Image (cartoon, rainbow, N blue to C red; front, side):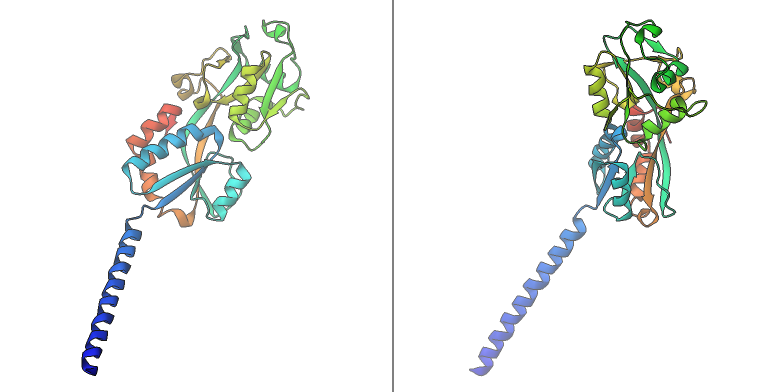
Length: 274
């Protein structure tokens, strides 16, 4: 009788162990099959392009890419703390552990309200507006109305910095006008100019829409050929940042960005894709 009970217990124990083993294998398989996650944090200036790239990448790859927009300081903190895998856009913080790679060039468009009669502006005139030397649209063959220049609060916004270097600080740095209005994002810039008949601002080319009017700059239109041939002077590089430890995990994403599929999407928004 005891032997019979022992055999029963042994059989029961074996069945339990087999079930546990099968369960563990299923969990392991599920973990192996679970797609890897890649988190991209980007500046709002490149958000439309990065979202489109992530959508296309996710359709054809095992890794799942998620995208969020954040301010520069917070974004680099996330990269340093490994809560983000890579950043796109921004002005680089000094950090020997962070690598960067240029992936494209975009242009900076100068915008005014659609009701504004001015169609073009020179780089020197643009500088004089932002330094307060020109304050009335009448001096630019527009209506006799006070000009409302708009800029970004964040000096490390890549568009703000490039505009400052190319326009505001050329040939020498000058005091900015007290009349400048400041916005926090590209979307705010678009909305502010669309709602203010006397405003002038600047946005990345990929954010341009017909809510506002795009001015020619020194007689040159913001077209792909003019920017690529460096006739249109306002353009800025778009970079990708990543830590050295993330190189292997980002290998497939890098390959995608260099592929014709990736470049095709980048060229929808930007002038050059590298």
